[in-house]
Image (cartoon, rainbow, N blue to C red; front, side, top):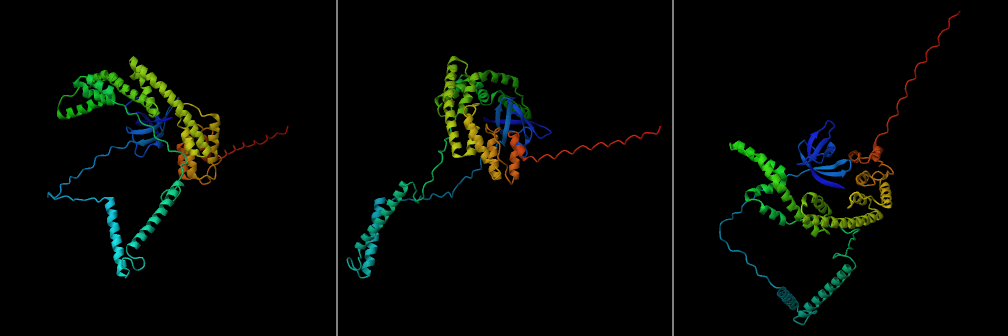
Length: 435
C-alpha cells in the first residue's frame, strides 16, 4: 500500500539517480530514479513523493513538486465621490395582487378591442369578457395537459425536458472523514508550562526540536547583523527536549479520543497513525487502556472494510471494468492480505484479454499502468502488443519496466544472432622426403 511523504533530495549520482531522505529526519532514506523527477530538480529540493513500503526497502513510485504558497493580491480601496446620496427604494407587490391586476388589464383590453369592432359587450363573435374567459379556459386546459405530460414523464424516469435519466452503473463512493481532534489536553498541557516558556513550547509542539534549532539560527543571524549578542542554542534545545514528551502525550490523547469517537467513519489511515503513535504517546494506565480500545476498534473496522473491498472487487470484475478493478486491487484495507485464488485468476484473465494486438496504444498503456501496481502483475501475460506502438506507450513501458520486467521485454528489439567464429586454417600436409 503506497503512502505519501515529503522527501529531501540529498545527492545526485552519475547515472542520473538521486538519493533521498525524509524531510527533517534521518529515516526513512533511499534512492529514486531521476526520470521520476520534474525538470529543474536539484539537490536540496523538498518534494512530495508517493512511496511503497516493502520488506526490502522503500520504493518511490512518483514525485511531484510542492506548490508554493500564493501571496495575497493587493486590494484596492474604494473611496467613492464623498457625496451623501439617497439610496434606491423598492416596493414589492404580492403574487395575488400581480395576478389580479394583470387579469383586469387583459379583460379591459380585450373588451375595448372587441367593442371597437362592433361587438359591444355581448355582440360580435363572442366579444367582451366572454372571449377573455374563453381564452383563459383554453390556456388553463393547455397548461393542465402540459403538467400532466410532464408529471407522467417524471414518473417514468425522465426530467423536465422529457429525456430519460441516465442510470449510474455504481454509486459514487463518499470520501472518508479526516481526523479532526480537539485541543483539550494540548491546551491544558500548555497552561502548565511557565509563561516565559510557552512560545518555545508551541514551536516544539509544531516542529519538534529541529524547529527550535532553525528558529535559533534565524534569530542569531538577525542578531549578528545588528551587532547584538547571539542566543546559545544548546540551552534552548535542552529546554525543548524536556518539554517535548509531555506535549506529545497530550497531543496524542486528543487524537486518540477523536479517533475512538469516529472509529466507524474516520479514515483508516488516520486511525492507524494514532495507533502507531501510541508507543510514544501512551505513558500512563489511562492512555494505555485508550490505546487498547483503539486497536480493538481498528481491527474490527479493517475486517469490515476488507470484506466490503472484496465484494466491490468481485462486482467490478464481473461487470468488465478491468482498469478500475486492477487499481482497487492495489489498495487493500488490510495490508499484506493476499487476494483469493479464484479472484486473482479472474483478474489476471481480464487483464490478459484487455492487452491484445487490436487494443489501441492509449488503452494498452492505461491497462499497463493499472497492472504495474496490482498484486497480479507477475501473473499477467498480454495476448499481444499493439500493432502501432506510440512514443507515449514506450515511455510508459520504460517508466514501469522495473515493476513489470517480463511485459517490458516484449517491447525490446530482438537481439541480433551472434556471428559464427571463423574457422581455423587447415595446416598443409608435411612433405615426406625420399629415403
